[in-house]
Amino acid sequence: MAIIKLKKSDIKEALDLVWKVFLEFEAPDYTPQGIEEFKKYISYDSMIKQYEKEEIFFWGCVVNNELTGVIATRGSNHICLLFVNKQYHRQGIAKRLFLTVLEDCKSKLNINTISVNSSRYAIEVYHRLGFVDCDEEQNVKGIRYTPMCYSIK
Image (tube, rainbow, N blue to C red; front, side):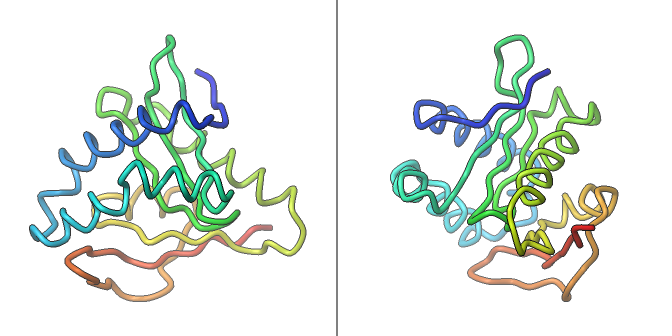
């Protein structure tokens, strides 16, 4: 298992993994509008533009040359995507990806927190990682999420 910073050439595969996992685990809790909004959010063209401007950063977990998990941050400290292929759940991949982001944040000055807008499905995972709820569940354009924060020590 290796965690790598993804290159531009890896982004399409990463977004395909995100969409596949989203459809299986997240989409059942979303309205049709929410599903469409998420699909637009992760569109390749949009993500590549943000990647090229260094507004979004991607890391991946690779097992036996297969991309098994993806984490992305908007800026340095807002997790905007964290998805792991179903067959690799409960193997510590999400934790390893998060710890990579945490170390990246610790290496930068003046970053005291990491934020995420967690889906219902992932709340427990984020709690186990040390996140706390910062607000109650929100619903924006059919996307339901709970704002959460992690204090960097």
